[in-house]
Length: 158
Image 1 (cartoon, rainbow, N blue to C red):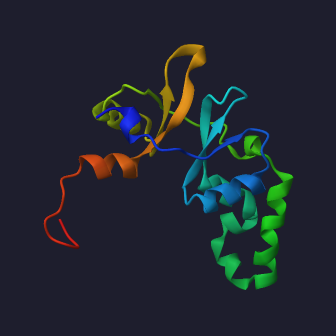
Image 2 (cartoon, rainbow, N blue to C red; image 1 turned 45 degrees about the vertical axis):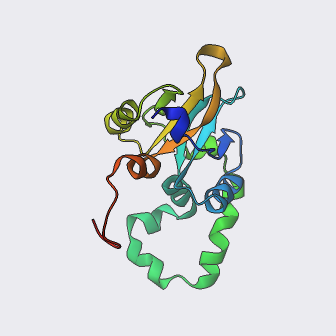
């Protein structure tokens, strides 16, 4: 099985996309992160949902999560207002590892090795090589494991 067989369309954003739009994409597509692409739609990075949360939650609450208990629901309802003031570029970790990128003809084992080596739950898949390569989609660890794990004969267990 090749990367092109496992790749599924995956939501993308650009560095200049506002963080509120990115957060909505995360929830609408039920994804743990988004692929950040450049102006030619080449993958640059992953914006993890956890980074969106870091932008939402004030640092004093991140430093002492017990403070969250004393804040009222009005505060919780208003924290999303700050997302529109940020861009994806501000949220993407500066010390991030590069996004693993596979070619459409890479094998399942090559994709698994990329995920393991980069500690990434996601690999972008390009259709073609070089300047003309286009983002075909992505393979998540869920997609990959779902294809390689043996089927269970017993319902609800291995």
